[in-house]
Amino acid sequence: MIAVIGLVLGVLAGLFIEPTVPANLQPYLPIAVVAALDALFGGLRAYLDGIFDERVFLTSFLSNVVVAALIVFLGDQLGVGSQMTTAVIVVLGIRIFSNAASIRRHLFKA
Image 1: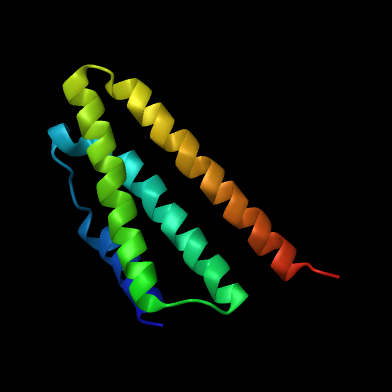
Image 2 (image 1 turned 30 degrees about the vertical axis):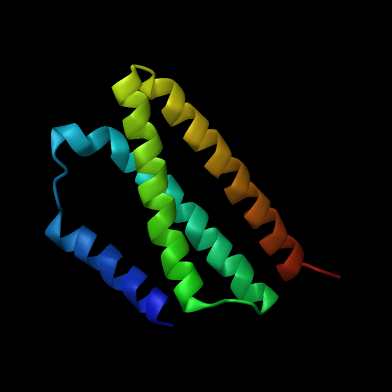
C-alpha cells in the first residue's frame, strides 16, 4: 500500500512541480523510466501471485534503475552509449512483456 501511495504522490508532484532534468542526465531518464516500469510490472505480478514483499519491491525498483543507468553510463564512457541503451531497453522490454503476459493470464484465466 505504501508503494501505491508513493507512486500517486510522485505522479502528482511531477504534474504540478514540472521538474527539469539537467541536459547531461537527460539520456538516462528514458532508461530509468523503463527500469522503473519493469519493477512495477514485476511487483504487480508478484502481488497477483500472492508473493509480494514491499522490501523486495523497493530494492528491485531502486536497483533496476541504478544498474540500468550504470550500464548506459559505462557504454557512454566506452563510446557505445546508444548500443548499450538499446540493449538495456530490449532486455527490460522483454521482462515487461513477460510480466504483462503473466498478469494477463492471471486476470483472464478461465
